[in-house]
Length: 231
Length: 266
Image (tube, rainbow over all chains, first blue to last red; front, top):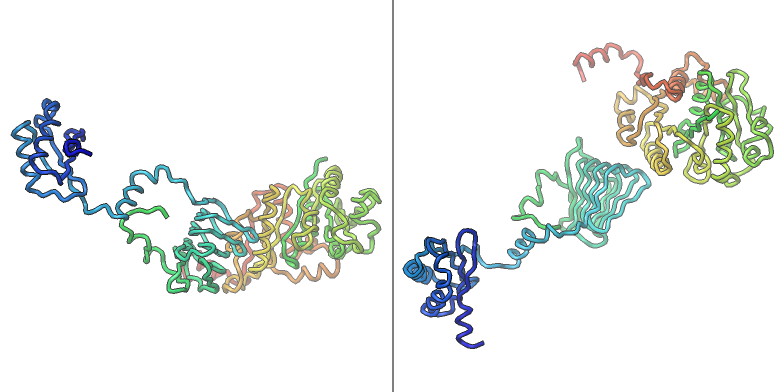
């Protein structure tokens, strides 16, 4: 790419709401940027008057002095209004990108991995889900529920539950009335869990190689996550 | 005549299916209906003994289904209760001698002759169960207040639903004193787990054993609480759905109950 072509790519402008967004290459010298701004803004002179201009230096490090200098230049040459720099919340790390993807796109197109059932799973019946299993109902003694991921029972769990089959130790088993005959998470198994005196939401998870059952409301295991994630 | 076939089942053995079949059958006959009770426990027949008709058996249900005799020849008329007939099981065959398709055909014949046909289902969920439910329109599930009985009843209820039969529940052999002490499941606990409509609660009663041994119908014994409970169940089966379900209570607890009612004590 020739130097002239590189200079032409140094400034790009696009409409943003009621103002203009100007993307600049902070590696170009200020006088080159001013030349390019003149070239780009001249045909837009009628739109630029009193317009709010946001300067975007991408992920690069553009100094505040440069923002001030270019702002003064734009105000003097084209009579723009407020000039500011687009605020960036730190670098776009993998988490940030994941979050952006989740927030912007994935949820709209996400094909659910959850098998959601209503009703009562009776003794002798077995329900198996490829990934997560959600039952709006009860699981009776003698019934079996198994899932590749989490098992959520919006009712009483009195049968056998096997989550994270066959080797996912991160899975949980949650029930509003938690009194299972047996719980399995991945290869870890627990039986004879003491029944609570009254029904309340509890969940089982693996901690240090063993299954631990906790009050779900008090533990609130996912409340600490900074943003919603697809599980 | 287009009768109704009701299967009496439980999954678990020894919970009182045969007693319930004999007593509800007798109760329905006393309501003026023409009733046949069919012993489907082929190879282990009992219903004839409970009804005191064992010495009158010539033909049995297998003979009737296989066309070796007419239905009227296999049906034994009870001499104490009008309109009550027993079709006994064979004692020498096994359950595999019949298949569900045979029973569906036989069911049509029975429906043409009787208002109610009660099938006394054997324990278990194998061929005997399949034969018993093959032609059934309705089901009564008998359950005792024991965890094992509840679990088996739950299994059977699932199998009945799978055959598009919505069962009704009888809780048998309730000992009110034990329920009050918390040593026995209450009928509310059982209904909570099984999630089906309750049709009757039957208290534990010594008269059941006397009746079974002597072959005298339980419902004819005036002092029998279980007999009275089965009579009420028969009335509900016969459409008296307004009849309230009587909860067995412990004796001599009147003042305690009154205290509870007015918010005193527990």
